[in-house]
Length: 521
Length: 90
Image (cartoon, rainbow over all chains, first blue to last red):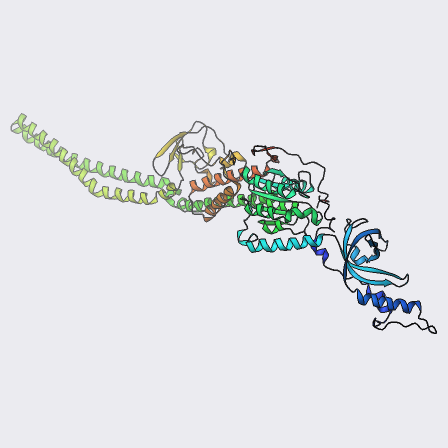
């Protein structure tokens, strides 16, 4: 680091806001203010007391030096047990005692010590008991800080005007970074903090460290190079630029224009994390996101995996519930069909048909018997007459007539049946069609019949290995053979062992319906 | 020259976005059985993948290197204990 400026208090401008030490209480109050314009004349008969004289001196000094900035080197630095700080400011020609009251001394940086050149603000007064005049310090800063502050303000103003801090161009950080670039010292506290936090929150992220000095001469160009190189390397989701706490001079590279411009030019979002919470740097203003500390930068850069895991859990619950919901809807729909008596008592349909058939058979039998009776009668009559007349030819004609009659009769019977019963059968078929659970089948259900029993299979336990199954789908049927007899109910509703999750996904077209309607059990 | 990552697998964000779609569809109750089962399986798979990413061991930490030619590369990086910043950490 260049020796051109001593180290700062702690690198924060806030400290320079004057805190007023309660110095006047033990000086001004003790003596009424006297006009210094009235010189004290020597009065041999009535000399003034030491106290009076001292009060006059005090008043004079306070009048003359109510608020000064004085520069000098610290010596005899002494922090009293009371908390007050005493030191001497000196240069080549003179020295002056200084007091910093406890109220202000608490924030004094360790960098303020003997040999350090500082700038002190305060008023001059007198410690009357010892007749010492001294500076009652209200604020103190390392020499040169004033110039830095001015430079900081000027640069900030200029870059602001130029639009480098424009909130509209701040980019959001990626939610789940895969590759994080870090520009900082490879040996500093910052990199350790960042790695620690990222490892805890989002270990899936890869980290690329662009090593750069982060203080002193030559730091700024290295930081610039780091930002540029990470951009050049590519496939970086965001860049963290920063360092841990330090004096204002230590943090100064992050107030350099070149660093600001490199951040501005970065193709990926930049998080600036310089020093402590209270430190603000130019890079903070240019960066897409300002983090108060390097640890905080890492927190901003990556989500907490615990929280993400919890969100995933919640999502899984919703997905499972969504599927259950769908199944419930379908189940309800199916229940409506199952409640229909034709499904509950399928034998009725068969019985109805059996009755019809038997009825038809009975009628047919009756008709045929009737016909036969009449034919036989006519035949016998004809045979009787024939025997009397022309036996052979007449006989044969009669037999032919009988065959013809039987034939016509049968045709008539068929027509009759077609007319009377055909309509009935059509109607029955139509009703059956209505009852057919096409709607369900079309949605992916199927009805499986166990061939051995001829019944609809509702429990896996009813089927044995080797049984043949007839599966009725919306379109067509499939025959399959039972290969095992797991009576376990449907897979798929249990959360997520990897293999289970995929189980409900049947290979397309393969009738793995051996468990039939078990999904709805 | 920018190096491209070998895998073109969907990012974590893309997976979450797809999960969100799946949840919405399933919760609407408007998809049929086959589709529901398919969505469920896909969702469960996505969650499994995401969890895997969450559980991944700490990824590589590398240090960017630059050859004299300007060629960029990386080498393993291990933070040292030394502290040249003169800071006291956080």
